[in-house]
Amino acid sequence: MLDDTHMSYFPSVVRLLKEEKADDICVIGGGTIPEEDRRALEEIGVSGNFGPGTATKVIIDHIVERVGQREELKNLRGEL
Image (cartoon, rainbow, N blue to C red; front, top):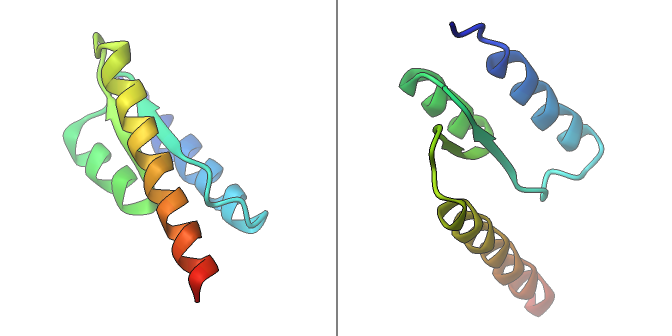
């Protein structure tokens, strides 16, 4: 049974990170999340949203890619 807590917890975490100017932290989701909620979470910055049984390597690769993108942005900012 889905209880929809992901739609209150994840937005709260993202909001608090933004308030603390820590929104460069990669927030990923997981578990049984309906597709429409996944899209809504992605719109606010929660990436991945991995379902049950997702291979650990897939999750690690996603995090590494996201962190790499942020490092590239930091490097670009340093060049400006």
